[in-house]
Length: 118
Image 1: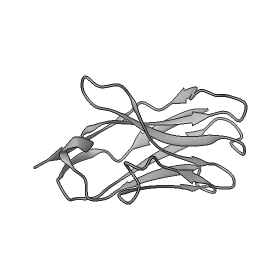
Image 2: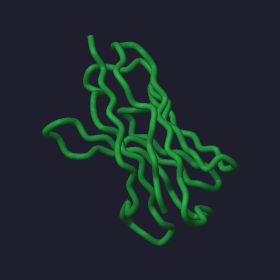
Image 3: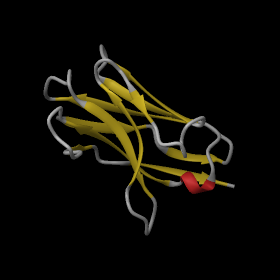
Image 4: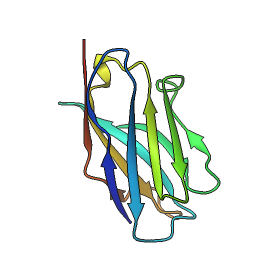
């Protein structure tokens, strides 16, 4: 599948931002899609995932309450809503997809920069 992320930008601490990812190229019924991020000098970090159908979500505890993931099956997009952003949320955010029979995230978007200033 192909993934195209959008929606990054420069915001202030406490602001909200919504990232979107358009997915194309194949049937996604059994896929899991999600978001990862990578800050400078750090390893890529898992942020959130959602199954294309039936839309089950998972976020690590560190993101629960501030971030939320959703998808629009008709539009073939999924989104990451980020609230109360903090400086430490500054990173390149990547959307990704994992095939039904795969243990790894095989398809990645190009990344979108999110910068949070004080």
